[in-house]
Image 1 (cartoon, rainbow, N blue to C red):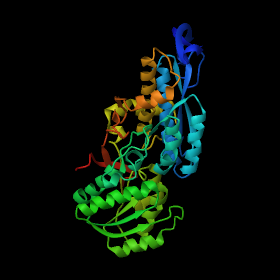
Image 2: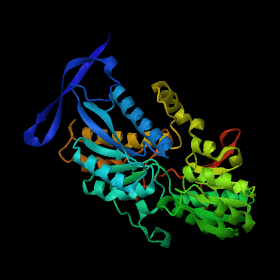
Image 3: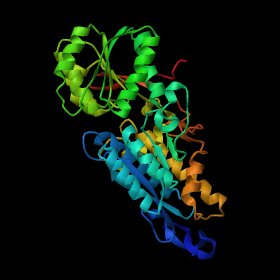
Image 4: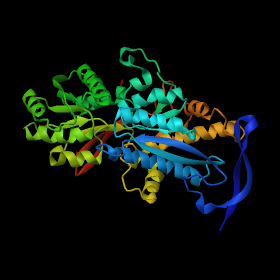
Length: 412
Protein backbone atom coordinates (compact mmCIF):
# COMPACT_ATOMS: atom_id res chain seq x y z
CA UNK A 1 0.00 0.00 0.00
CA UNK A 2 1.54 3.29 -1.18
CA UNK A 3 1.52 6.44 1.00
CA UNK A 4 2.28 10.05 0.24
CA UNK A 5 2.77 13.20 2.27
CA UNK A 6 -0.37 15.07 3.21
CA UNK A 7 -1.05 18.72 3.73
CA UNK A 8 -2.44 19.50 7.16
CA UNK A 9 -4.33 22.69 7.72
CA UNK A 10 -3.45 25.18 10.40
CA UNK A 11 -5.31 28.40 10.92
CA UNK A 12 -3.22 31.50 11.15
CA UNK A 13 -5.57 33.93 12.77
CA UNK A 14 -3.24 36.90 12.62
CA UNK A 15 -3.34 36.94 8.81
CA UNK A 16 -7.02 36.16 8.53
CA UNK A 17 -6.17 33.37 6.11
CA UNK A 18 -5.85 29.61 6.04
CA UNK A 19 -2.26 28.42 5.75
CA UNK A 20 -1.48 24.95 4.39
CA UNK A 21 1.57 23.19 5.86
CA UNK A 22 2.89 19.76 4.99
CA UNK A 23 3.23 16.84 7.40
CA UNK A 24 1.80 13.42 8.11
CA UNK A 25 0.61 10.81 5.61
CA UNK A 26 -2.58 9.20 4.38
CA UNK A 27 -3.68 6.16 2.46
CA UNK A 28 -3.91 6.99 -1.27
CA UNK A 29 -6.92 4.70 -1.61
CA UNK A 30 -9.00 7.37 0.11
CA UNK A 31 -8.10 10.01 -2.46
CA UNK A 32 -11.50 9.88 -4.20
CA UNK A 33 -13.53 10.74 -1.10
CA UNK A 34 -15.47 13.95 -1.75
CA UNK A 35 -16.00 14.56 1.95
CA UNK A 36 -13.63 16.50 4.18
CA UNK A 37 -10.78 14.29 5.44
CA UNK A 38 -8.50 15.29 8.25
CA UNK A 39 -5.57 17.19 6.80
CA UNK A 40 -7.45 19.12 4.13
CA UNK A 41 -9.81 22.06 4.19
CA UNK A 42 -13.22 21.49 2.64
CA UNK A 43 -14.44 23.76 -0.13
CA UNK A 44 -18.11 23.30 -0.89
CA UNK A 45 -19.60 23.79 -4.35
CA UNK A 46 -23.31 24.49 -4.12
CA UNK A 47 -25.52 22.72 -6.66
CA UNK A 48 -29.02 23.92 -7.46
CA UNK A 49 -31.29 22.01 -9.87
CA UNK A 50 -34.70 20.33 -10.02
CA UNK A 51 -33.94 17.05 -8.27
CA UNK A 52 -37.60 16.07 -8.01
CA UNK A 53 -40.59 16.78 -10.22
CA UNK A 54 -41.14 16.79 -13.98
CA UNK A 55 -37.68 18.12 -14.86
CA UNK A 56 -35.72 15.95 -12.46
CA UNK A 57 -34.22 13.86 -15.29
CA UNK A 58 -32.23 16.90 -16.39
CA UNK A 59 -31.57 18.07 -12.84
CA UNK A 60 -30.18 14.76 -11.64
CA UNK A 61 -27.85 14.61 -14.63
CA UNK A 62 -26.57 18.05 -13.64
CA UNK A 63 -26.08 17.00 -10.01
CA UNK A 64 -24.32 13.74 -10.80
CA UNK A 65 -21.96 15.37 -13.27
CA UNK A 66 -20.90 18.08 -10.82
CA UNK A 67 -20.43 15.40 -8.18
CA UNK A 68 -18.18 13.47 -10.57
CA UNK A 69 -16.07 16.59 -11.12
CA UNK A 70 -15.58 17.05 -7.37
CA UNK A 71 -14.67 13.41 -6.85
CA UNK A 72 -12.14 13.42 -9.66
CA UNK A 73 -10.55 16.64 -8.42
CA UNK A 74 -10.19 15.02 -5.00
CA UNK A 75 -8.79 11.80 -6.43
CA UNK A 76 -6.15 13.78 -8.31
CA UNK A 77 -5.52 16.06 -5.31
CA UNK A 78 -5.88 18.76 -7.92
CA UNK A 79 -5.83 21.64 -5.45
CA UNK A 80 -3.21 20.95 -2.81
CA UNK A 81 -4.70 20.86 0.67
CA UNK A 82 -8.30 21.26 -0.54
CA UNK A 83 -11.09 18.67 -0.62
CA UNK A 84 -14.15 19.53 -2.70
CA UNK A 85 -17.66 18.65 -1.66
CA UNK A 86 -21.01 19.12 -3.40
CA UNK A 87 -24.00 20.52 -1.52
CA UNK A 88 -27.00 19.71 -3.73
CA UNK A 89 -30.33 21.48 -3.17
CA UNK A 90 -33.62 20.86 -4.98
CA UNK A 91 -35.34 23.88 -6.55
CA UNK A 92 -38.19 21.85 -8.16
CA UNK A 93 -37.87 24.25 -11.12
CA UNK A 94 -39.45 26.98 -8.97
CA UNK A 95 -37.87 30.47 -8.78
CA UNK A 96 -38.89 30.92 -5.13
CA UNK A 97 -37.15 27.68 -4.15
CA UNK A 98 -34.06 28.64 -6.10
CA UNK A 99 -33.88 31.96 -4.27
CA UNK A 100 -34.18 30.20 -0.91
CA UNK A 101 -31.43 27.78 -1.93
CA UNK A 102 -29.21 30.69 -2.91
CA UNK A 103 -29.62 32.09 0.61
CA UNK A 104 -28.65 28.71 2.06
CA UNK A 105 -25.49 28.66 -0.03
CA UNK A 106 -24.61 32.16 1.15
CA UNK A 107 -25.10 31.10 4.78
CA UNK A 108 -22.67 28.18 4.40
CA UNK A 109 -19.26 29.87 4.61
CA UNK A 110 -17.57 26.84 3.04
CA UNK A 111 -19.41 27.44 -0.23
CA UNK A 112 -17.05 29.22 -2.63
CA UNK A 113 -19.05 28.75 -5.84
CA UNK A 114 -22.31 27.34 -7.15
CA UNK A 115 -23.35 25.27 -10.16
CA UNK A 116 -26.84 25.67 -11.61
CA UNK A 117 -29.67 26.08 -12.03
CA UNK A 118 -31.42 24.44 -14.97
CA UNK A 119 -34.18 27.00 -15.55
CA UNK A 120 -33.51 30.58 -16.61
CA UNK A 121 -36.36 31.84 -14.43
CA UNK A 122 -34.77 30.17 -11.41
CA UNK A 123 -31.37 31.55 -12.35
CA UNK A 124 -32.88 35.02 -12.48
CA UNK A 125 -34.23 34.63 -8.95
CA UNK A 126 -30.85 33.53 -7.59
CA UNK A 127 -28.54 36.05 -9.24
CA UNK A 128 -28.80 39.01 -6.86
CA UNK A 129 -28.65 36.89 -3.69
CA UNK A 130 -25.42 35.25 -4.82
CA UNK A 131 -23.95 38.42 -6.31
CA UNK A 132 -24.50 40.37 -3.08
CA UNK A 133 -22.38 37.72 -1.34
CA UNK A 134 -19.78 37.81 -4.16
CA UNK A 135 -20.47 34.11 -4.71
CA UNK A 136 -19.82 32.75 -8.20
CA UNK A 137 -22.73 31.16 -10.04
CA UNK A 138 -22.02 29.02 -13.11
CA UNK A 139 -25.05 27.62 -14.90
CA UNK A 140 -24.72 24.67 -17.27
CA UNK A 141 -28.16 25.24 -18.76
CA UNK A 142 -29.58 28.79 -18.47
CA UNK A 143 -30.03 30.21 -21.97
CA UNK A 144 -32.00 33.46 -21.52
CA UNK A 145 -29.78 36.28 -22.91
CA UNK A 146 -31.01 38.79 -20.30
CA UNK A 147 -29.21 36.95 -17.51
CA UNK A 148 -25.85 38.12 -18.82
CA UNK A 149 -26.68 40.99 -21.16
CA UNK A 150 -29.56 42.75 -19.41
CA UNK A 151 -33.22 43.27 -20.26
CA UNK A 152 -32.48 45.50 -23.27
CA UNK A 153 -30.08 43.09 -25.00
CA UNK A 154 -32.46 42.67 -27.94
CA UNK A 155 -32.57 46.42 -28.44
CA UNK A 156 -28.82 46.56 -28.94
CA UNK A 157 -28.01 47.70 -25.40
CA UNK A 158 -25.99 45.03 -23.61
CA UNK A 159 -25.16 45.53 -19.95
CA UNK A 160 -24.03 42.77 -17.62
CA UNK A 161 -26.32 42.76 -14.55
CA UNK A 162 -24.20 40.62 -12.21
CA UNK A 163 -20.44 40.10 -12.42
CA UNK A 164 -20.58 36.85 -10.46
CA UNK A 165 -22.86 35.05 -12.95
CA UNK A 166 -21.46 32.80 -15.72
CA UNK A 167 -22.71 29.98 -17.92
CA UNK A 168 -21.20 27.15 -19.91
CA UNK A 169 -24.26 26.88 -22.21
CA UNK A 170 -24.77 29.27 -25.11
CA UNK A 171 -27.81 31.56 -25.19
CA UNK A 172 -31.18 31.66 -26.94
CA UNK A 173 -29.93 34.67 -28.88
CA UNK A 174 -28.00 31.99 -30.77
CA UNK A 175 -30.16 28.90 -30.29
CA UNK A 176 -33.48 30.28 -31.59
CA UNK A 177 -32.00 31.69 -34.82
CA UNK A 178 -29.93 28.52 -35.32
CA UNK A 179 -33.15 26.46 -35.35
CA UNK A 180 -34.82 28.94 -37.70
CA UNK A 181 -31.92 28.74 -40.14
CA UNK A 182 -31.96 24.96 -40.11
CA UNK A 183 -35.72 24.73 -40.66
CA UNK A 184 -35.85 27.33 -43.44
CA UNK A 185 -32.61 26.58 -45.27
CA UNK A 186 -32.06 22.85 -44.68
CA UNK A 187 -35.48 21.37 -43.91
CA UNK A 188 -37.21 23.73 -46.38
CA UNK A 189 -40.01 24.61 -43.98
CA UNK A 190 -41.70 27.88 -44.93
CA UNK A 191 -44.74 28.21 -42.68
CA UNK A 192 -44.48 27.79 -38.91
CA UNK A 193 -46.92 27.88 -36.01
CA UNK A 194 -45.14 29.26 -32.92
CA UNK A 195 -46.17 28.23 -29.39
CA UNK A 196 -44.59 29.05 -26.02
CA UNK A 197 -45.26 28.44 -22.33
CA UNK A 198 -44.98 32.14 -21.30
CA UNK A 199 -41.96 31.42 -19.09
CA UNK A 200 -38.61 33.25 -19.21
CA UNK A 201 -36.92 30.48 -21.17
CA UNK A 202 -39.77 29.41 -23.43
CA UNK A 203 -41.04 32.84 -24.43
CA UNK A 204 -37.54 34.16 -25.00
CA UNK A 205 -36.51 31.22 -27.15
CA UNK A 206 -39.70 31.37 -29.23
CA UNK A 207 -39.17 35.09 -29.72
CA UNK A 208 -35.65 34.79 -31.10
CA UNK A 209 -36.72 31.90 -33.34
CA UNK A 210 -39.70 33.80 -34.73
CA UNK A 211 -37.68 36.93 -35.51
CA UNK A 212 -35.05 34.98 -37.46
CA UNK A 213 -37.58 32.81 -39.30
CA UNK A 214 -39.41 35.92 -40.53
CA UNK A 215 -36.12 37.59 -41.44
CA UNK A 216 -35.28 34.60 -43.64
CA UNK A 217 -38.62 34.95 -45.47
CA UNK A 218 -40.66 32.37 -43.60
CA UNK A 219 -44.32 32.92 -42.73
CA UNK A 220 -45.87 32.73 -39.27
CA UNK A 221 -49.06 30.69 -39.59
CA UNK A 222 -50.12 31.51 -36.04
CA UNK A 223 -48.94 32.03 -32.48
CA UNK A 224 -50.26 30.72 -29.19
CA UNK A 225 -49.38 30.59 -25.51
CA UNK A 226 -50.14 27.55 -23.36
CA UNK A 227 -50.25 26.69 -19.69
CA UNK A 228 -47.79 23.79 -19.45
CA UNK A 229 -49.48 22.49 -16.31
CA UNK A 230 -52.79 21.62 -18.00
CA UNK A 231 -51.52 18.90 -20.39
CA UNK A 232 -54.71 19.36 -22.43
CA UNK A 233 -53.71 21.14 -25.61
CA UNK A 234 -56.56 20.00 -27.86
CA UNK A 235 -57.73 23.53 -28.71
CA UNK A 236 -54.21 24.61 -29.70
CA UNK A 237 -53.75 21.40 -31.70
CA UNK A 238 -56.92 22.20 -33.66
CA UNK A 239 -55.60 25.70 -34.43
CA UNK A 240 -52.34 24.23 -35.68
CA UNK A 241 -54.23 21.83 -37.96
CA UNK A 242 -56.36 24.66 -39.38
CA UNK A 243 -53.38 27.00 -39.92
CA UNK A 244 -51.79 25.03 -42.72
CA UNK A 245 -48.37 25.23 -41.02
CA UNK A 246 -45.73 22.77 -42.18
CA UNK A 247 -43.89 22.84 -38.83
CA UNK A 248 -44.53 23.80 -35.19
CA UNK A 249 -41.96 25.56 -33.04
CA UNK A 250 -42.39 25.25 -29.27
CA UNK A 251 -40.61 27.35 -26.68
CA UNK A 252 -40.72 25.37 -23.47
CA UNK A 253 -39.72 22.08 -21.88
CA UNK A 254 -40.40 18.40 -22.42
CA UNK A 255 -43.16 17.79 -19.81
CA UNK A 256 -45.56 19.86 -21.95
CA UNK A 257 -43.84 19.46 -25.33
CA UNK A 258 -44.28 15.68 -25.44
CA UNK A 259 -48.06 15.68 -24.90
CA UNK A 260 -48.38 18.72 -27.19
CA UNK A 261 -46.69 16.91 -30.04
CA UNK A 262 -48.83 13.83 -29.52
CA UNK A 263 -52.05 15.87 -29.52
CA UNK A 264 -51.09 17.89 -32.62
CA UNK A 265 -50.56 14.70 -34.59
CA UNK A 266 -53.81 13.18 -33.34
CA UNK A 267 -55.63 16.33 -34.43
CA UNK A 268 -54.51 15.56 -37.98
CA UNK A 269 -51.48 17.82 -38.39
CA UNK A 270 -48.77 15.38 -39.40
CA UNK A 271 -45.98 17.90 -39.07
CA UNK A 272 -42.89 17.94 -36.86
CA UNK A 273 -42.69 19.78 -33.58
CA UNK A 274 -39.36 21.54 -33.06
CA UNK A 275 -38.01 22.86 -29.77
CA UNK A 276 -34.85 23.88 -27.99
CA UNK A 277 -32.65 22.21 -25.41
CA UNK A 278 -35.60 22.13 -23.01
CA UNK A 279 -37.09 19.22 -24.93
CA UNK A 280 -33.81 17.45 -25.69
CA UNK A 281 -34.24 14.62 -23.20
CA UNK A 282 -35.00 10.94 -23.22
CA UNK A 283 -38.17 11.86 -21.33
CA UNK A 284 -39.49 13.63 -24.44
CA UNK A 285 -39.19 10.35 -26.33
CA UNK A 286 -41.37 8.67 -23.72
CA UNK A 287 -43.95 11.46 -23.52
CA UNK A 288 -44.43 12.04 -27.24
CA UNK A 289 -44.46 8.35 -28.09
CA UNK A 290 -44.75 7.12 -31.66
CA UNK A 291 -46.35 10.40 -32.67
CA UNK A 292 -43.14 12.25 -31.84
CA UNK A 293 -41.03 10.43 -34.41
CA UNK A 294 -39.55 13.02 -36.76
CA UNK A 295 -39.66 15.83 -34.21
CA UNK A 296 -36.55 17.98 -33.83
CA UNK A 297 -34.66 19.63 -30.99
CA UNK A 298 -31.66 21.90 -30.81
CA UNK A 299 -29.23 21.67 -27.94
CA UNK A 300 -26.09 23.45 -26.86
CA UNK A 301 -22.73 22.21 -28.10
CA UNK A 302 -21.79 19.19 -30.17
CA UNK A 303 -23.02 15.70 -29.22
CA UNK A 304 -21.02 14.73 -26.13
CA UNK A 305 -20.52 11.17 -27.32
CA UNK A 306 -18.74 12.38 -30.48
CA UNK A 307 -16.20 14.64 -28.77
CA UNK A 308 -12.73 13.19 -28.12
CA UNK A 309 -12.58 15.50 -25.08
CA UNK A 310 -15.64 13.76 -23.62
CA UNK A 311 -14.53 10.13 -23.84
CA UNK A 312 -13.11 10.05 -20.32
CA UNK A 313 -16.16 11.82 -18.91
CA UNK A 314 -18.57 9.31 -20.45
CA UNK A 315 -16.46 6.36 -19.26
CA UNK A 316 -15.97 7.78 -15.75
CA UNK A 317 -19.65 8.63 -15.39
CA UNK A 318 -20.57 5.06 -16.21
CA UNK A 319 -17.87 3.70 -13.92
CA UNK A 320 -19.11 5.86 -11.04
CA UNK A 321 -22.41 3.99 -11.16
CA UNK A 322 -24.87 6.87 -11.21
CA UNK A 323 -28.40 5.56 -11.65
CA UNK A 324 -29.52 8.41 -13.90
CA UNK A 325 -28.06 9.36 -17.32
CA UNK A 326 -26.08 12.60 -17.56
CA UNK A 327 -28.66 13.89 -20.04
CA UNK A 328 -28.34 17.10 -22.10
CA UNK A 329 -26.38 19.17 -19.58
CA UNK A 330 -24.08 16.63 -17.93
CA UNK A 331 -20.94 17.72 -19.77
CA UNK A 332 -21.77 21.38 -19.20
CA UNK A 333 -22.34 20.78 -15.50
CA UNK A 334 -19.04 18.92 -15.23
CA UNK A 335 -17.29 21.83 -16.94
CA UNK A 336 -19.13 24.36 -14.75
CA UNK A 337 -17.91 22.58 -11.61
CA UNK A 338 -14.40 22.42 -13.01
CA UNK A 339 -14.43 26.15 -13.75
CA UNK A 340 -14.95 26.70 -10.02
CA UNK A 341 -12.28 24.12 -9.14
CA UNK A 342 -9.83 25.82 -11.51
CA UNK A 343 -10.67 29.19 -9.97
CA UNK A 344 -10.07 27.88 -6.44
CA UNK A 345 -6.74 26.46 -7.59
CA UNK A 346 -5.71 29.80 -9.10
CA UNK A 347 -6.65 31.70 -5.93
CA UNK A 348 -4.81 29.27 -3.63
CA UNK A 349 -1.66 29.21 -5.76
CA UNK A 350 -1.62 33.00 -6.06
CA UNK A 351 -1.86 33.31 -2.29
CA UNK A 352 1.05 31.07 -1.25
CA UNK A 353 -1.09 27.97 -0.75
CA UNK A 354 -3.72 29.76 1.31
CA UNK A 355 -7.41 30.43 0.97
CA UNK A 356 -7.68 34.18 1.60
CA UNK A 357 -10.25 35.71 3.90
CA UNK A 358 -12.09 37.12 0.86
CA UNK A 359 -11.97 33.79 -0.99
CA UNK A 360 -15.47 34.11 -2.41
CA UNK A 361 -14.78 37.39 -4.15
CA UNK A 362 -11.44 36.18 -5.47
CA UNK A 363 -12.89 32.90 -6.73
CA UNK A 364 -15.72 34.74 -8.51
CA UNK A 365 -13.17 36.96 -10.22
CA UNK A 366 -10.97 33.97 -11.10
CA UNK A 367 -13.87 32.10 -12.72
CA UNK A 368 -14.05 34.85 -15.30
CA UNK A 369 -10.43 34.20 -16.24
CA UNK A 370 -10.50 30.40 -16.59
CA UNK A 371 -9.37 28.96 -19.90
CA UNK A 372 -9.09 25.19 -20.22
CA UNK A 373 -10.12 22.28 -22.40
CA UNK A 374 -13.20 20.72 -20.89
CA UNK A 375 -15.61 17.94 -21.74
CA UNK A 376 -17.59 20.22 -24.05
CA UNK A 377 -14.55 21.86 -25.65
CA UNK A 378 -12.79 25.05 -24.67
CA UNK A 379 -14.16 26.52 -21.42
CA UNK A 380 -13.80 30.28 -21.11
CA UNK A 381 -16.10 33.26 -20.70
CA UNK A 382 -16.52 36.57 -22.50
CA UNK A 383 -16.99 40.01 -20.95
CA UNK A 384 -20.64 39.22 -20.16
CA UNK A 385 -19.95 35.88 -18.49
CA UNK A 386 -21.22 33.95 -21.51
CA UNK A 387 -19.41 30.92 -22.83
CA UNK A 388 -17.15 31.48 -25.81
CA UNK A 389 -18.32 28.11 -27.18
CA UNK A 390 -21.25 28.95 -29.51
CA UNK A 391 -21.70 25.56 -31.15
CA UNK A 392 -25.16 23.98 -31.38
CA UNK A 393 -26.64 20.73 -32.70
CA UNK A 394 -29.95 19.77 -34.30
CA UNK A 395 -31.29 16.37 -33.23
CA UNK A 396 -34.09 14.28 -34.74
CA UNK A 397 -36.22 11.76 -32.88
CA UNK A 398 -35.91 8.49 -34.78
CA UNK A 399 -35.43 4.81 -33.98
CA UNK A 400 -36.45 5.45 -30.38
CA UNK A 401 -33.77 8.02 -29.60
CA UNK A 402 -32.37 11.44 -30.47
CA UNK A 403 -29.94 11.34 -33.41
CA UNK A 404 -27.67 14.24 -34.35
CA UNK A 405 -28.56 15.77 -37.71
CA UNK A 406 -26.36 18.86 -37.94
CA UNK A 407 -23.82 20.63 -35.74
CA UNK A 408 -22.35 24.06 -36.23
CA UNK A 409 -22.60 27.72 -35.35
CA UNK A 410 -25.13 30.38 -36.20
CA UNK A 411 -24.62 32.00 -39.61
CA UNK A 412 -24.60 35.75 -39.20
